Length: 170
Image (cartoon, rainbow, N blue to C red; front, side, top):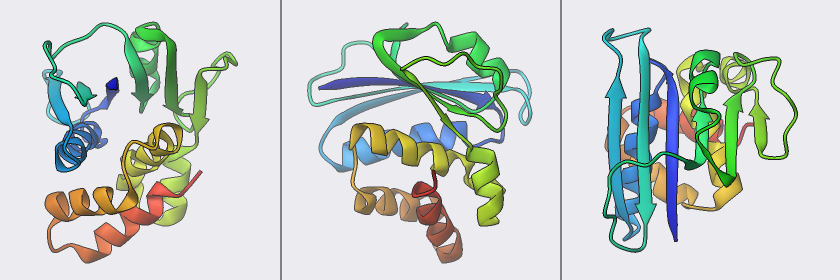
């Protein structure tokens, strides 16, 4: 089993945290993982994307062209990478910010920004999108994700609880 996941959005949307968490969850569960970040010149608001490869075998290359899963946070990112998905790949996209998308069997809209706002946690968009990826793949258990949240958020228990709730929004 090898999964290649591209995540893209604006800096500050949680793109890199999501990629790092996926890699952390994989290694925690005994899988191999590589996280490759790419940043635009700006710190916040610029472009940000990353590639995450997860496998139960050795990973020989940190980069790939066509992802099995592409998670798009915003329209510019969607437009840039939507065609770099494998034949059987899926595109999970934030339909709050990405509109006028043609209906395709492999396109999965999720109102991530809207759902995170309803939760009262606008910074949880990445966890809403992660929840959809987990529903599609059954890649990790909620317990593994909770451990990753503890690792990345430490003592911020209220944020951990909010992010766990965000995983279940759809």
